[in-house]
Image (cartoon, rainbow, N blue to C red):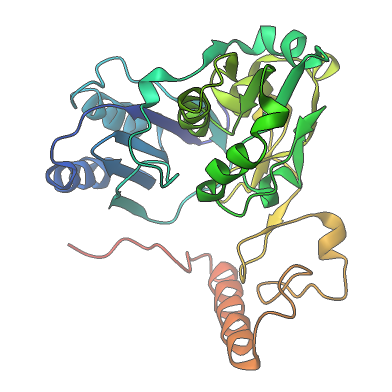
Length: 308
């Protein structure tokens, strides 16, 4: 990480037993507010998941608090840094699942075998290994590993159906799965094992861990990795990527997308230009105008802390 960049970004998750997630929300919000930490954390009976950003001191304070929660004493996360604030607000949300797959009874503690980033290349280069990208299609579109299968899912809820539809192609194979930070693979590999496919592996710490530790010259990663904050995408060494974000549909946009006549900053991109009516487009245009005016005044357009 580059210490000169002021914002400390921490992506973390933990499958842990939370009997009453709603009771954890108020004190967690209070700790984040007291330390000027922003981002999103999801709480469910199965644990926590999210990404937060702030000063080094603020992140350390929130992490220390999270380690007091049941099953989280040794909680760690994937660290990176950002030049500008990756988040504008702090949200703590109560969910049924910390990563939504929609299949009851999947035991994430019975996940596949972890593979360290340093050992990942040898595994996925083996022609006997089926490499599966468990992320959504829009994430895969901007970057993935060589030889990876794209399930072309719109959401993680679609993944179980893909596994069952493609069971014959997976049967008897060594299966290597990966995702952004590791959490989807905990459930994805557990699901595959529950389906009776036992030779299953997943990348420890996900793509972000790989990009941080594997040199570009040795890398089998192609493209950039989508992240769910204002950085949009990162590359090797977790350096800021080249993709922007369409504020209308929230999809990543490349330099080529932004050069398209179908792209209008803050209003539409090639993926959504024909999916919005004039009223919506006018609303997006006004929002983009107000954001630009706020930036010109040196103010934050969204996410300003409410008094009290």
